Amino acid sequence: MGQLKDADAIGKVGNPVCGDVMWLYIKVKKSKGKLRIADIKFQTFGCVAAIATSSVITDLAKGKTLEEAFKISMTDVTKSLGNLPSVKLHCSKLAADALAEAIYDYYVKHKMPIPKQLEEKHKEVLRHRREIAERYRDWIEAEEKVLKNKKK
Image 1 (cartoon, helix red, strand yellow):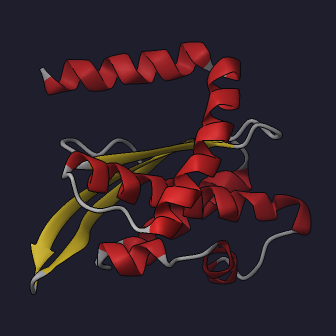
Image 2 (cartoon, rainbow, N blue to C red):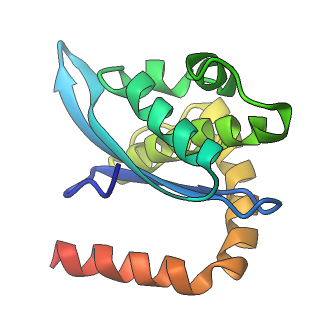
């Protein structure tokens, strides 16, 4: 939990209905010729289920290649928790989306070709992000300011 200093990429997602917001930070290293998630942390503003799914996605993704990590689904997250109430299943989707966004961010920053499925998921997340940004503008701006100051 928390910010990952010197993160290589960040996935920022939110649910416009419930208002949950997740930021997922990844550090990527090359191991055995493949890019792997060497470290991963999260910051979540939301309910207990949102926090739990954020935590589980970090456990599922750490050590995986970017391709393996992108395949982690909301079903994988839910199963790892031993299930979720149906009204909270959207939290597992949010966690999977946060991971996909972090991977997307990594591909963009490193000018790598973006797989079609990842591009499609990114477009969906962008729609939700615009809605969340309107609701939580002050919090998001404060977090981004902190990140910029740490990089200086």
